[in-house]
Image (cartoon, rainbow, N blue to C red; front, side, top):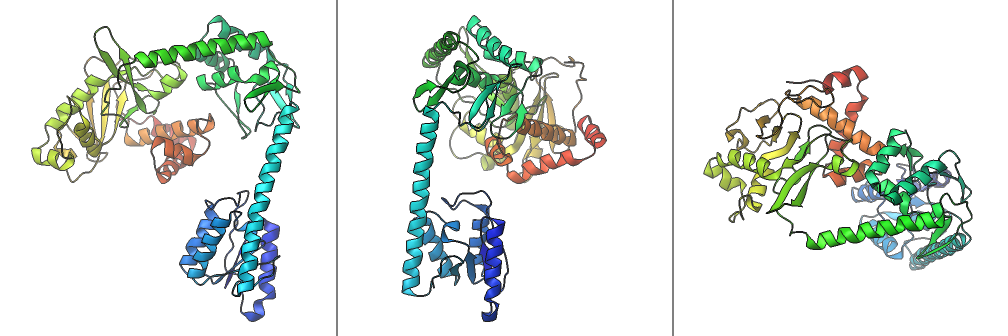
Length: 484
């Protein structure tokens, strides 16, 4: 039983023909593995890991490769894989390199081919770096995609006459004192989008995208080559004086921020960190602390609103002491036995310390805050009945409970939306799916896996959420506006 491993369809066909020529000695094709477009410089390749896993399970006894460097281009990785295959009784054969891995001379030839593959990879890297450095010195642009206001033609940037006035306006208004968020809102209001690097897609503007535009030297006719700026082979969109003025203001803001950070109070505890979510847009609520006249004020703020401004989400800041006091009163009603079982050893520090945070993370999956009605929806964990001891009416089908926080508006409509109604669990899941799709579309994350790692979600849960978008549009709308 033999298995071909290659990185191209043509090479895989050659491996199959090689196996067919050895059918007389009992060889037959069983499985194929191919990592298209992935470098052999490391072993973190899905198909290669599947091949090693199947080798441990004993699904085959020989691996046929087109060349040794298709398997690995690092000598240490190659020897480790060869040793692991040998331990499980799996031989290695190369179509274009004739050697017998069972003899000492064949093993020496195999090791020499592995060293040559690593040497070839190192030489290719060095030549590519030298070519890239020389191209940048000649003023060529080697980025994955053209910056806003340009299009790329064979490593040369060609200005877009329709977008050039917008680039000049962004630089002029920033030097005049406009904020990054106001500039992003201006571009979004006029329907302008920025290209997502290397993906051929477009997304809305945010502060980080405007900051990247302002510090990019291509708009002044320069190309960054290491730590230096060289003259580019393209036409500038703004004058050097205007670009330098924008850099001076950016450095002044950076220094002001560092001075504020030096004067800032020590970071205070936020026990609900990672549990709170915004009910209006589905984003995670992040801790924020501000210096008041007599004390430091703590809040939980919608992350989407912090990144993109108040036009992105209308959820107000949630006072940390108000939310933590409410949750503390609920958990204080738990029987001592339940609290002792869920709380780690040690006394809490302060009013809401580490022990309380451990207890709340053990009791709740998430806390969803609806700023338009002041409601806090608690999604409970099933911890052997401990959550059901809370002094609240709990919906056992959905595992949720609702409290109304004091001091927040009740029934006040935002943008004409109805308030005072609690969405069902299906509506929350659908809203979360739409929010996740928007984050992928606007370029917040490159891949679903990266987004899952950043949000602390499992990849399977993320794909289950996104699969809801395959429903008919009418069904999506019905689920989205379903209330209790």
